[in-house]
Amino acid sequence: MRIYGPVPSRRFGLSLGVDVVPRKTCTYDCIYCQVGPTDRRTDAPERFYPVDEILADVAEALEEGPAPDVVTLAGSGEPTLYSELGALVDGLHALARIPVLLITNGSLLWRPDVAAAARKAEILAPSLDAGDPETFARINRPAEGIPFARMVEGLRGALAAHPGEVRLEVMLVRGVNDGDESLRAIAEILKTLRFDRLDLNTPVRPPVPERGALPCDEEVLARAVAIFGPKAAPIGTFAKRGDAPRPPRSFDDFDKDIRETILRRPCTVEDISASLGAPAEVVAASLARLEAAGLAARRSGAYWAAK
Image (cartoon, rainbow, N blue to C red; front, side):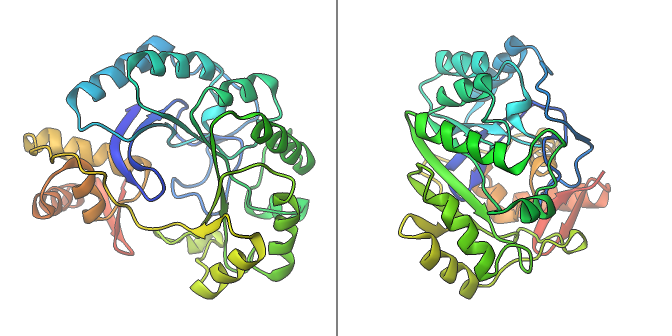
């Protein structure tokens, strides 16, 4: 369960996910998180799993295929809470010549050990959702040891020192951080950060209305682009990079693959079809079986893992 996918990413192509923390162990409890509320909120890194076990799982997934565009450290919690992150990235580089992507909320980049580990990933993709402490507390709900100023300072230093690609993400939530005042506050911080691209996102897959996380419309995203500058752009749709499709395996294994994929993020039939190289009708039949068994639920056009 530590490895999932490859799954389609709207930003990075076909991604083999590596989950290095227990489900919903995080430094934040973001209102928009698709995984759900944080079970354990902490700012203290730990060695949750042995590095060699994770690398063995990755090696098996790479051997089975299809070949991913990136190996992504992300998943169902905050990956920088894994204290062996630097050693893990070194091991991933030894396994395959595939770029390592670190998707992080950026909350711990003020720590020298975390910043050093982040520099080893070819692509660093941190988040910045607020331009002031009040909005930060409202949207991200951080652990007690992560004040806004410390987070921003760490983000600034880590991005400046990173030798590879930096893809910053801003999640805009209707009525929370999408007003002109909030956007301009974020823009002031952006002026002090080094990044190659700014990806604008909004909680549309699907939204989480019960936690106050509703999507912004296109007009808001266009206004944000105008305020943030030419490096900003709304996230596009997923486009696979041309691997030959893999024939579906036996239904039991295939159902398990889909279940493990939607455990970590909601996906449409089309997403899963592109990711696993299976016909859409086969994916739909598998999802119907999972739904009938109470293991999947359909909502707003996407499938979630039901507990």
